Structures are given as structure tokens and as C-alpha cells.
Length: 291
Image 1 (tube, one colour):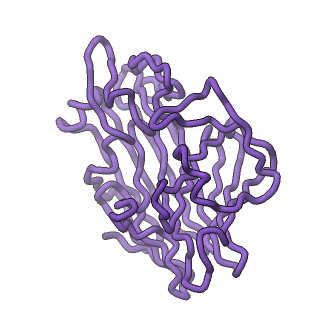
Image 2 (tube, rainbow, N blue to C red; image 1 turned 60 degrees about the vertical axis):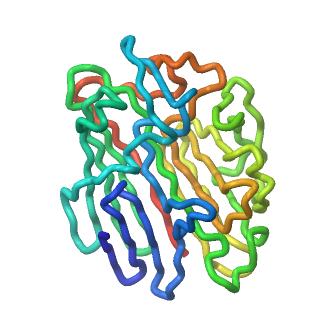
């Protein structure tokens, strides 16, 4: 386990999956969901090379069929540390015999975590070392404790606010698939009070159109919470498992979507897939402020 620390935060990152597993403030507040398997046995997995689920857990590329389960394989692979200081770590994953069976592409996936004062900055990079196009999706899936402290009330005392305040285009899920051809509206001009029933059809998926967006999770009883900021992500998912009354919420930056209800199964036709030409690098990420 990798430890990053400054005067405000102590952050733990697991080399397996390059997964953020803990963020504690100097007063002992634990912000990250602690992976109780009765609800959801993960903390904050990296989603690569797909986001969500493929139809029948399979796809076809250049005439050959491949199998891949939900959210891809990166979350279940050992990354290697390429650089580390007291406040920053960079981890990397490349193709292997095991990944090529599921995904016939060479790639260099780099994930960096850096703490600056009360903020954790997460960088995501995908490099195409080959001459052929690289087709991929990528995302993050951090879970946050709700409540953050025992005296912070319950799930319904928390709310989500989104900036800019506006009515967002919401992409409905017909679990486990997405339906971008039947968009809905979600009024986020005012705070959205948490209720487990919000997630009775899986995640709330907002289309951001690449605009800079901040999603804040806080409560009505004290000043504790988080603010997750995105610069260019096309989508963000807000999720808690249903019908379980789970004491956490995930705020998920996505550069990709689950297969659509009418997906052809051809990877080149996959909705919201990213195409990276030979030698090019995709760079993005997000920041979380803890208060």
C-alpha cells in the first residue's frame, strides 16, 4: 500500500488496480468508502478499457470476438510504480499476454495521484505506442462515505450540488445498458437531496458536453463534504447500489459509456468510444477537494 501525506490529508493507494483506498483528514475523518462486501467490495476502481457493461459481455473487432466483463480489466491488474514522493505517486499498466486475450491493443495506462493542501489531483493518461488506432474508454469510480461521521445524520441529510447550476441532459440506463437516444432532464438548479430511490434504475448519468463541472457532496448538519471537479469529461455518473440501503455514494467521471440498448457489438461502432491514433496520448483527470 502506498501512503501519501501532507499536513491536511493522508492518502492510501493500492498498487493493485491503482485504486484509491483511503483519504483521511487531520481530524480523522475517512472520506473514502471502505469496501464492505455486503454492499460493494471496492473503493475507487479505475475503469479501462471500457466503462460499464458490453452487450453479453462481448464485442467484435476486425472479425474476431472478445469477452470482457463490466468496467474492463485495469481494476484487477497489478500496476507498477514509476515515480513516488511523499505527496505524489505515478503508476503504470501496459498490455500483457493476459490483457491481449481480452483486448487486442498495445497501450500505456498511467494514473497519478498528487495531494496539494486539501485537494487530491488525479491524472489519467492513455498512450498508443502502436501505429494502429487505439479504441478505448476510461473512467473513475470513487465512493464516498455517507455519512462521513457518526454525528452527520443519515443518507437523507446529504445532498449533491452541481456547478454550473442548470438543467442537465440525463442519459437513462436500462440496466445494465445506456439509452442515449431517449434523454431525460434533471433539474440541478437546486441541491439534489439524497434518497436511495434515486438509484432504482442504476446511476444518474449526466451529459456534460465537456464543460468544466464541479459536483459537491455535503450535508445539512456540518461543514464536511467533498467537491469533485472535472475539466473535460463528457459524462459523470452518480451512483449508490439499489435496493441495498448502502451508506455511500459514488461520483464517477467517465470518458465513455456502457453499451447502448441498440449496440451492434462492433467495437468500432461503440457509442462514445475514444479513438487514439498511433503515437498519440490522451490526457485528462479530475480533482477532489476535501472539507
